[in-house]
Image (cartoon, rainbow, N blue to C red; front, side, top):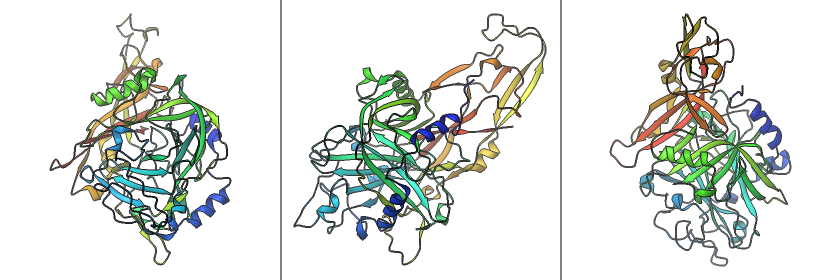
Length: 500
């Protein structure tokens, strides 16, 4: 029987295949951290009215490079139309970083040096907008990008735990992840969006920069084809995501295991898409919430049905890494951490802790087994193949006191949003040998088949001393405004649980 675990043999294989640095060696990556620790050659982040401006703040008059902002008609944007208009402050967006300084030379802006980043405090999304000038790259080039944590003191944080996989193990702190944009870089240049989900870490305020920092890594790669389960997904809106083994990132060329991400309202070119992806998006929009482990639904006043969905999948990419170009190897003071004095660091414009919520440990599932005698009276049931004798009724329940103690909310939202768990589902991998007469509810999530529905099932006794099969808890967190200032948001995450 296949085992499901966020760090099982599947992920060990992923790490073995993908442990390829974004830069040529670890030393090079370390040098880039030192060089860029001030961000943008020391130019501070600039307050800027991004909502009502048409262009970025101009560079020097002698060499103007003044692109239109991504959501304007002349921007040359290659961002999904369902998220391009989602940038309003009223929906929770805040400006965090930018290269809008008037003395930011045109030469600094080549090959992806112009960027800005918005953060949505109600969805926990950090979105970078990267501008690539015309003629920088030819056709067939994609962007590989991601975030990684670096620390000179061994500090670790869980802020990246909601990326890299669609199943979260709270006992493991993910140090980095890599995504690949499915939209290639156009010869004419333009804007590209890179969106990351941030988990709230209640300990992050105790960290200081530069003892702990965040690196935003991006480079060009050449990918000729992307397939999920043998189906071409050339029109997929989103990214391919995977965990990386260290702070340098990794490559997913010729990848095997990863997660597909859907952004925007739906999947374009629907007839060419894998059916499971399409079904997962449809079920989420209809409120059914099946077919996925991780999703963010709603929150945009322009389009309340916006989707950010992750699904584990078998990914097959073909292509080469031919002279990769580092686009913007920048390191940042992350919002919410303390800056040590006189180190020349560049603080973010929005400096509250990021993330909406997190679990600080694994949830606990209790199992009680009641012994019953005789053969179950269901001769036509497909699992009713054992001879007469004893069997058990196994009942699973969530320990609510444990869940309440490990569920942490970002206190910076207390005055503007209500954050609460509104639904819980226990999920088991399909363990047919356990069932005698209970008809299980089967749910397919990417490569994985799980059973959910009732929390009681009959069959052989569940032995908590043996790994009978992975147990997961899928929770739905509702983020709502007490004054109806923004549309309600559902954040669905699935966590590995302990069974006792």
